[in-house]
Length: 327
Ligand SMILES: NC(=O)c1ccc[n+]([C@@H]2O[C@H](COP(=O)([O-])OP(=O)(O)OC[C@H]3O[C@@H](n4cnc5c(N)ncnc54)[C@H](OP(=O)(O)O)[C@@H]3O)[C@@H](O)[C@H]2O)c1
Ligand SMILES: *[C@@H]1O[C@H](CO)[C@@H](O)[C@H](O)[C@H]1NC(C)=O
Ligand SMILES: *[C@@H]1O[C@H](CO)[C@@H](O)[C@H](O)[C@H]1NC(C)=O
Image (cartoon, protein in one colour):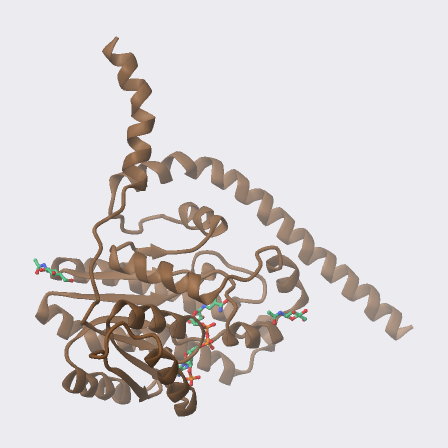
């Protein structure tokens, strides 16, 4: 009899355990640095930090965009004691970046949270990239993230606290037509984030890797201009997410110490499918993931097949139109 009751309540118990909120750290009155904070996802994240009562430093290259965002953030403050600071720096220059991070600590106070959103996407067939474009993507997306981590980790370790957020993408977990270069830089961030997680966990420092879907930002608008037809056709089903939604989620996940931060059902499926050896916070999440993995792999086969058929169709259409032209 007891066994039956137990079995009946087990699913309810597991669901309660699954949706139970995790304890959340607070950034009120703390110093939050957002690299790439003058536009798109970084700007929205800076807004969340400002609304929550943090001292916010935004870093990026363009001074006008920084000033404009500072004005915007000043209109979002929770108390008049908060300080908003702007720093113009190129994240791909290690010496400059390290100096700026040191200077702003002296000015505002110890950095409690570092969020790196600086990045860009260029799409295209691998052979069409100039060497300069390849270098730019590696320098900003990968090296910039690594540099920011290298510069703050010693301070965080010494203080035995801190939160680090890196911004990957859905193509940190899967390859996609047109993203050979971009996706490589974003896969690299997963290796960086997973290794770093292990190194800094004993020092009470957390690492979160954000995996935004297509998000409505100036960066996305630029990326859109370089997308091959195949990439457009494959990714158009997803739609565009508001950067404020991505930013709220990112902050929530980082403050509860979740490793992956993502938005929406498709990203949940992809992240679950690609969990691999990634770190976990709760056993219940591991149970849910392992229950879903087998089925999700089968579903993925349908997606992959449909992507491949889109690509094949584009190739035949291109060849037919080329033939017509040459006739
Ligand atoms: N939007 C999407 O659909 C999407 C999806 C997945 C992942 N992501 C990732 O999310 C991040 C933000 O994307 P977004 O769409 O919000 O881009 P965005 O609107 O173009 O904003 C990028 C920010 O990074 C700064 N930045 C760029 N290069 C820099 C450099 N070398 N040094 C310092 N700052 C630099 C930019 O300012 P300056 O140009 O003035 O330096 C700007 O503040 C990127 O890593 C992107 O790959 C975006
Ligand atoms: C870990 O860091 C949090 C703030 O992020 C702090 O409140 C807590 O006291 C720290 N714990 C230890 C053991 O240092
Ligand atoms: C992306 O480009 C296509 C044209 O190639 C256009 O129809 C679409 O509106 C663009 N989307 C965004 C968000 O800029």
